[in-house]
Length: 208
Image (tube, rainbow, N blue to C red; front, side, top):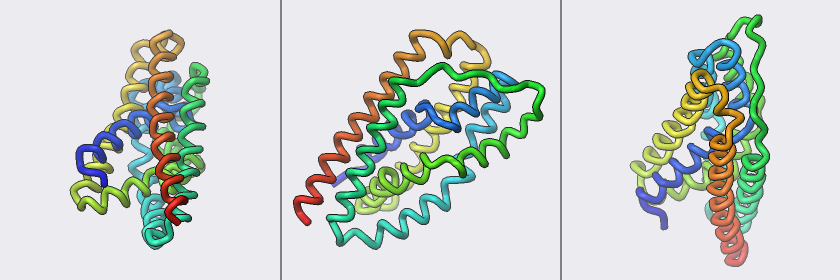
């Protein structure tokens, strides 16, 4: 069974990986930063705080009713492993982001919320990875749930804010070797969690 320390570590690792991993929201963070400055990129980075609550609640309500059906949870875990493998591969393949159009009105918060609601990544992540981990945390106690969510959101938002600041101050960083090494490290982290989910899924299916 998980404990608060392992849940917190998982929240930090997944939050940092999700924060820096390529996708529509990070692309928008960086493009808004390059077009309008770091402040607008930071506004986009706050979008998950607004959009994720209903996604988490819906996935929790569904999966919490399936705790006595290990075969279904096993399939969910394998789906989560596949999703994390895909995200990890995308980290290795991530191209440097381009800049946005400075002539357009920023509307960064609205753009960020719209991009995240339309982005399938949060729905898939919480349904196959995030909420299964939250259910494990709930078995430990409410403090573990709060620790996971708190650390996850501090890390995912902090990562995107850091990306905005770096893009604003050091534009060459986005095409540097350091950036590619950072993305490769995050890719390896996601592959590690993919392996853990795949192993858990096979155990659940084997015990079904």
